[in-house]
Structures are given as C-alpha cells and as structure tokens.
Length: 200
Ligand code: SF4
Image (cartoon, rainbow, N blue to C red; front, side, top):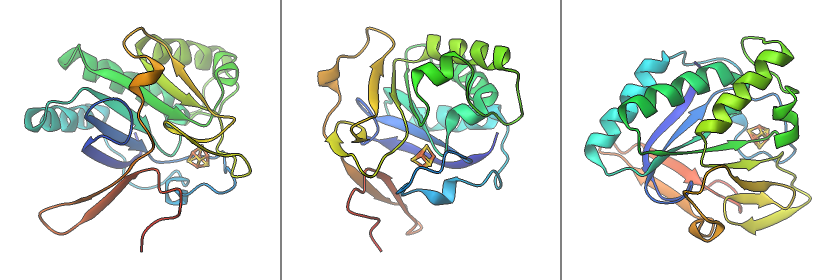
C-alpha cells in the first residue's frame, strides 16, 4: 500500500486515543483541501503487514482505543485497507475503526469510486461491504470550502458522520482539535483540523 504517514497516538481523530494511518493518493481534488501533499499516487510503498506491525508497536506503548484511516483517500486503496483492517483485528479484536472518505455512502455502495489497482464495479461493491462491516464510524463526502462547518470531525456541512456499529453515539465525538506532536528528534507532526491554515 502507499502510505503517507502513521501517527501512533492522537485524540483529534475520533473517540479516545487512536492511531491514524494516512493513505497516500487521492484523485478527488476537493477545492480547498489542506493536505494536497497526499494527492499523488507515489512515494512510500509499504507492506500491509508492516503497517499492522507498526500499530502493534504503538499499542505496546499506549492504551489505544482504535485506528482512524485517513488520507489521501483510503477507499482508493480499498483492497489494502480491507487487508489492513483484517490484520489489525486479528491481533487486536477490541479496537475500533473509523475512516475519513471523500466518497458518499451511495457512491461506495454502488462501486462508483476509483481504486488502485483497478477493480470492477462488482469487486468495489464487495470491498466496500467488507470495509463497512468492520467500521464503527465514517466521515463521508467531499470537503466543500463554500460550506465551512465546525461539527465534530466535519469541516463542511455536506459531510456526514455515519455510525456503523453501536459502539459509539454522536455525543462521543468531541469538538475539532488540532494536535502538534514533537518527537525526540525535534520532528513535528500535525494532525486534526487546522481550519485557519497550517502553522508555519
Ligand atoms: S477527499 Fe480529502 S484528501 Fe482528497 S481532495 Fe478531498 S479533502 Fe483532500
């Protein structure tokens, strides 16, 4: 899979303390997208089992409630996403899963989305069914800068927070946060919702 970044622990991307796995690559080109560096399908190709292993290592250091998949567009690597979810669940059956996707539920359910590698519409429907079965929540729909919103996890009004299991309720999703972590080498990682722009 093409990986953009791995954040081992954050409270800005869903309920509780969560790892965030950022997929590299997105063709949706929402106007005003603040993470354009994730758009090109190029860069770090990583085996799914290695990403699952990084999650296991993060789980040894922190009590993690779940994983949020973000990007880029995770559903444009749906095959890898599903394999990754299976691999993580095998080792950690109680973790919760969430995803940020620019697609609507209707687009995914009918296989109207692009994947890398290419897949038939029937295969894409199967892939979404598999992912959906494992998900606890999803934030769905393109970012639209003309409809700014300050809702939990949603930055434009057209986006929907969809609950796929009974693990969470809407009240479990707190206000938008921005988190900046500084590692021991001085490297900084920004995650969350920099609605006023990225700090320089
Ligand atoms: S789906 Fe997400 S990453 Fe892709 S263009 Fe839209 S906001 Fe940016």
